[in-house]
Length: 229
Image (cartoon, rainbow, N blue to C red):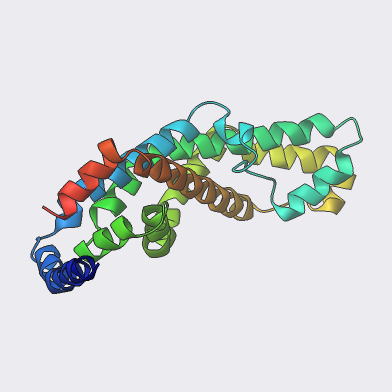
Protein backbone atom coordinates (compact mmCIF):
# COMPACT_ATOMS: atom_id res chain seq x y z
CA UNK A 1 0.00 0.00 0.00
CA UNK A 2 2.84 2.35 0.89
CA UNK A 3 4.49 1.43 -2.41
CA UNK A 4 1.39 2.64 -4.29
CA UNK A 5 1.41 5.97 -2.48
CA UNK A 6 5.12 6.41 -3.19
CA UNK A 7 4.59 5.76 -6.90
CA UNK A 8 1.78 8.29 -7.00
CA UNK A 9 3.99 10.92 -5.38
CA UNK A 10 6.80 10.23 -7.86
CA UNK A 11 4.45 10.58 -10.83
CA UNK A 12 2.99 13.80 -9.45
CA UNK A 13 6.45 15.25 -8.82
CA UNK A 14 7.54 14.34 -12.33
CA UNK A 15 4.49 16.02 -13.83
CA UNK A 16 5.16 19.22 -11.90
CA UNK A 17 8.80 19.19 -12.90
CA UNK A 18 8.14 18.69 -16.59
CA UNK A 19 5.25 21.14 -16.95
CA UNK A 20 7.57 24.17 -17.29
CA UNK A 21 9.53 22.29 -19.96
CA UNK A 22 6.36 21.77 -21.95
CA UNK A 23 5.60 25.48 -21.78
CA UNK A 24 9.15 26.29 -22.89
CA UNK A 25 8.63 24.02 -25.87
CA UNK A 26 5.46 25.87 -26.77
CA UNK A 27 7.13 29.24 -26.39
CA UNK A 28 9.96 28.14 -28.66
CA UNK A 29 7.63 27.28 -31.53
CA UNK A 30 7.87 30.23 -33.95
CA UNK A 31 4.58 31.58 -35.33
CA UNK A 32 3.01 28.19 -34.66
CA UNK A 33 -0.59 29.28 -34.92
CA UNK A 34 -0.03 30.72 -38.39
CA UNK A 35 1.33 27.54 -39.92
CA UNK A 36 -0.17 24.59 -38.05
CA UNK A 37 -3.37 22.81 -37.23
CA UNK A 38 -5.02 25.79 -35.55
CA UNK A 39 -5.05 27.62 -38.86
CA UNK A 40 -6.26 24.49 -40.61
CA UNK A 41 -8.97 23.82 -38.05
CA UNK A 42 -10.42 27.32 -38.06
CA UNK A 43 -9.92 27.80 -41.77
CA UNK A 44 -11.81 24.64 -42.58
CA UNK A 45 -14.52 25.49 -40.05
CA UNK A 46 -14.90 28.93 -41.58
CA UNK A 47 -15.00 27.62 -45.15
CA UNK A 48 -17.55 24.95 -44.27
CA UNK A 49 -19.74 27.42 -42.42
CA UNK A 50 -19.71 29.96 -45.22
CA UNK A 51 -20.30 27.31 -47.88
CA UNK A 52 -23.36 26.06 -46.01
CA UNK A 53 -24.78 29.53 -45.50
CA UNK A 54 -24.17 30.38 -49.16
CA UNK A 55 -26.51 27.61 -50.30
CA UNK A 56 -29.79 28.96 -51.73
CA UNK A 57 -32.28 29.52 -48.95
CA UNK A 58 -29.89 28.46 -46.17
CA UNK A 59 -30.20 31.59 -44.05
CA UNK A 60 -33.97 31.70 -44.37
CA UNK A 61 -34.41 27.98 -43.68
CA UNK A 62 -32.58 28.07 -40.34
CA UNK A 63 -34.55 30.08 -37.80
CA UNK A 64 -31.47 30.26 -35.58
CA UNK A 65 -29.73 32.52 -38.11
CA UNK A 66 -32.61 33.82 -40.24
CA UNK A 67 -32.21 37.49 -41.08
CA UNK A 68 -35.23 39.33 -39.71
CA UNK A 69 -36.67 42.64 -40.79
CA UNK A 70 -35.20 45.65 -38.96
CA UNK A 71 -37.30 47.05 -36.12
CA UNK A 72 -39.08 49.86 -38.01
CA UNK A 73 -39.72 47.64 -41.02
CA UNK A 74 -40.96 44.78 -38.87
CA UNK A 75 -43.47 47.12 -37.26
CA UNK A 76 -44.75 48.02 -40.71
CA UNK A 77 -45.02 44.41 -41.82
CA UNK A 78 -46.90 43.51 -38.65
CA UNK A 79 -49.49 46.07 -39.67
CA UNK A 80 -49.76 44.57 -43.16
CA UNK A 81 -49.80 40.95 -42.08
CA UNK A 82 -53.54 40.59 -42.47
CA UNK A 83 -53.93 42.75 -45.56
CA UNK A 84 -53.62 42.05 -49.28
CA UNK A 85 -50.03 43.34 -49.10
CA UNK A 86 -48.81 40.55 -46.79
CA UNK A 87 -47.00 38.85 -49.66
CA UNK A 88 -44.72 41.85 -50.09
CA UNK A 89 -43.38 41.47 -46.58
CA UNK A 90 -42.57 37.78 -47.07
CA UNK A 91 -40.76 38.57 -50.29
CA UNK A 92 -38.64 41.21 -48.58
CA UNK A 93 -37.62 38.85 -45.79
CA UNK A 94 -36.53 36.19 -48.27
CA UNK A 95 -34.59 38.75 -50.27
CA UNK A 96 -32.69 39.91 -47.19
CA UNK A 97 -31.73 36.32 -46.41
CA UNK A 98 -30.66 35.67 -49.99
CA UNK A 99 -28.43 38.74 -49.78
CA UNK A 100 -26.87 37.41 -46.57
CA UNK A 101 -26.11 34.14 -48.34
CA UNK A 102 -24.40 35.88 -51.24
CA UNK A 103 -22.31 37.96 -48.87
CA UNK A 104 -21.32 34.85 -46.91
CA UNK A 105 -19.92 33.20 -50.03
CA UNK A 106 -17.83 36.23 -50.93
CA UNK A 107 -16.61 36.65 -47.35
CA UNK A 108 -14.52 33.46 -47.34
CA UNK A 109 -11.16 35.15 -48.08
CA UNK A 110 -11.87 37.82 -45.47
CA UNK A 111 -12.27 35.25 -42.73
CA UNK A 112 -9.26 33.28 -43.96
CA UNK A 113 -7.16 36.43 -43.70
CA UNK A 114 -8.29 37.03 -40.11
CA UNK A 115 -7.38 33.45 -39.22
CA UNK A 116 -3.94 33.88 -40.76
CA UNK A 117 -3.24 36.62 -38.21
CA UNK A 118 -3.41 34.27 -35.21
CA UNK A 119 -0.47 34.46 -32.81
CA UNK A 120 1.07 31.62 -30.80
CA UNK A 121 -0.76 32.73 -27.66
CA UNK A 122 -4.02 32.78 -29.56
CA UNK A 123 -3.37 29.28 -30.88
CA UNK A 124 -2.65 27.77 -27.48
CA UNK A 125 -5.72 29.45 -26.02
CA UNK A 126 -7.86 28.00 -28.77
CA UNK A 127 -6.47 24.50 -28.24
CA UNK A 128 -7.19 24.58 -24.52
CA UNK A 129 -10.46 26.51 -24.80
CA UNK A 130 -14.04 25.41 -25.31
CA UNK A 131 -15.64 23.90 -28.38
CA UNK A 132 -16.10 27.30 -30.02
CA UNK A 133 -12.96 28.96 -28.67
CA UNK A 134 -11.67 29.74 -32.15
CA UNK A 135 -14.92 31.30 -33.28
CA UNK A 136 -15.14 33.29 -30.06
CA UNK A 137 -11.59 34.53 -30.54
CA UNK A 138 -12.26 35.65 -34.10
CA UNK A 139 -15.36 37.52 -33.07
CA UNK A 140 -13.69 39.15 -30.10
CA UNK A 141 -10.59 40.32 -31.94
CA UNK A 142 -11.69 40.69 -35.55
CA UNK A 143 -15.47 40.94 -35.50
CA UNK A 144 -15.74 44.69 -36.03
CA UNK A 145 -13.12 44.76 -38.77
CA UNK A 146 -14.74 41.83 -40.53
CA UNK A 147 -18.17 43.45 -40.31
CA UNK A 148 -16.77 46.59 -41.92
CA UNK A 149 -15.43 44.52 -44.81
CA UNK A 150 -18.55 42.38 -45.15
CA UNK A 151 -20.89 45.38 -45.24
CA UNK A 152 -20.07 46.32 -48.87
CA UNK A 153 -20.74 42.71 -49.87
CA UNK A 154 -24.13 42.88 -48.20
CA UNK A 155 -24.92 46.22 -49.82
CA UNK A 156 -23.94 44.85 -53.22
CA UNK A 157 -26.17 41.81 -52.77
CA UNK A 158 -29.10 43.89 -51.53
CA UNK A 159 -28.75 46.11 -54.59
CA UNK A 160 -28.50 43.24 -57.06
CA UNK A 161 -31.49 41.47 -55.55
CA UNK A 162 -33.62 44.60 -55.49
CA UNK A 163 -34.10 44.73 -51.72
CA UNK A 164 -33.96 48.52 -51.51
CA UNK A 165 -36.57 48.82 -54.24
CA UNK A 166 -38.79 46.31 -52.44
CA UNK A 167 -38.71 48.39 -49.27
CA UNK A 168 -39.47 51.56 -51.21
CA UNK A 169 -42.35 49.82 -52.94
CA UNK A 170 -43.75 48.64 -49.63
CA UNK A 171 -43.86 52.21 -48.39
CA UNK A 172 -45.32 53.56 -51.62
CA UNK A 173 -48.21 51.10 -51.90
CA UNK A 174 -49.43 51.39 -48.34
CA UNK A 175 -49.96 54.40 -46.12
CA UNK A 176 -50.24 51.98 -43.20
CA UNK A 177 -46.73 50.73 -43.93
CA UNK A 178 -45.38 54.27 -43.98
CA UNK A 179 -46.99 54.95 -40.63
CA UNK A 180 -45.44 51.76 -39.30
CA UNK A 181 -41.94 52.77 -40.36
CA UNK A 182 -41.43 51.20 -43.79
CA UNK A 183 -39.42 54.24 -44.84
CA UNK A 184 -36.25 52.88 -43.22
CA UNK A 185 -33.10 54.35 -44.75
CA UNK A 186 -30.83 52.44 -47.10
CA UNK A 187 -28.03 52.68 -44.54
CA UNK A 188 -30.25 51.42 -41.75
CA UNK A 189 -31.32 48.40 -43.77
CA UNK A 190 -27.74 47.61 -44.78
CA UNK A 191 -26.47 47.87 -41.20
CA UNK A 192 -29.18 45.58 -39.88
CA UNK A 193 -28.64 42.89 -42.51
CA UNK A 194 -24.86 43.09 -42.05
CA UNK A 195 -25.10 42.64 -38.28
CA UNK A 196 -27.43 39.66 -38.62
CA UNK A 197 -25.29 38.13 -41.35
CA UNK A 198 -22.25 38.30 -39.08
CA UNK A 199 -24.20 36.73 -36.23
CA UNK A 200 -25.18 33.84 -38.47
CA UNK A 201 -21.67 33.33 -39.80
CA UNK A 202 -20.07 33.18 -36.36
CA UNK A 203 -22.80 30.85 -35.14
CA UNK A 204 -22.06 28.44 -37.96
CA UNK A 205 -18.28 28.69 -37.59
CA UNK A 206 -18.69 27.77 -33.93
CA UNK A 207 -20.78 24.73 -34.87
CA UNK A 208 -18.26 23.57 -37.46
CA UNK A 209 -15.37 24.06 -35.04
CA UNK A 210 -17.16 21.99 -32.39
CA UNK A 211 -17.78 19.27 -34.95
CA UNK A 212 -14.10 19.12 -35.90
CA UNK A 213 -13.05 19.02 -32.26
CA UNK A 214 -15.24 15.95 -31.78
CA UNK A 215 -13.11 14.08 -34.34
CA UNK A 216 -9.86 13.61 -32.38
CA UNK A 217 -8.34 11.21 -34.89
CA UNK A 218 -8.69 13.78 -37.65
CA UNK A 219 -8.80 17.51 -36.97
CA UNK A 220 -7.94 17.28 -33.28
CA UNK A 221 -4.83 15.22 -33.96
CA UNK A 222 -3.71 17.64 -36.65
CA UNK A 223 -4.32 20.55 -34.30
CA UNK A 224 -2.19 19.13 -31.49
CA UNK A 225 0.55 18.00 -33.85
CA UNK A 226 0.90 21.52 -35.18
CA UNK A 227 0.98 23.30 -31.84
CA UNK A 228 3.07 20.87 -29.80
CA UNK A 229 5.60 19.77 -32.43
